[in-house]
Image (cartoon, rainbow, N blue to C red; front, side, top):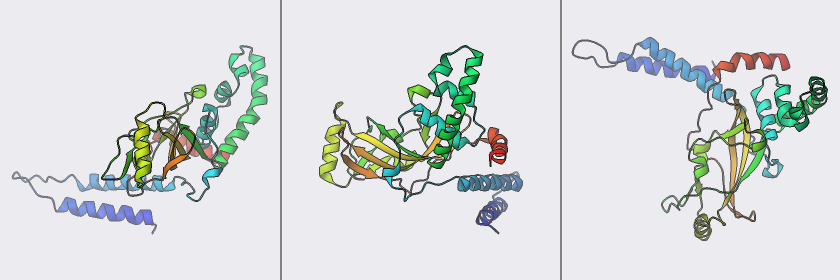
Length: 274
């Protein structure tokens, strides 16, 4: 029996025992929900766990120096196309990729351009699939006040769910799926902490963020990449690293949005394209 199956069976058994041991009201009605609904809930939870376990995981030993910089919406588009596992919509992608294709109204010219562009699009998707890593720089780390008890700074960038994008392809976005694990930056060195505290209050000296990530999956309902942050550097404007930290494994990571509306399409695409 697999580990996942054992997990589901154990969870279902525990829930059923809890249902049998529930108290009764004075009128004789049992407070506990029907055993069948508990078993169904256990199955759903087990299926969701199995789905998360099946997602690709980042290589924690990958050197940060090998991460390419993410600085355009086109790159986000290719990462999304690779992560989605769906057949690419080359006409839609060509609108983003080529200004000439986007601006021409000549149907024959458009067709000729697409024939020339498509191999380039395919190559970029292949490269994105082979290298689903990147780093992106943010001009404001959004640090909050130094926490003396925890010895570090809450980081506003990871305090809430946000979607980031580039103006050249704003329809393709990315979000930090494990943001809760990065919401606090430990800084044990008091001298560095004092410097960062001083910097965060000055608009022209605010610390920057350099975020390294892995494009784990795609939210097919929103053309969004679910990115797993692997490392964060807090730097000054010159690029000097003030603090560096990784995900806090003691904090549960968020669950990527469900993609049930597209599961069948993704499966068919995977079968068709290997």
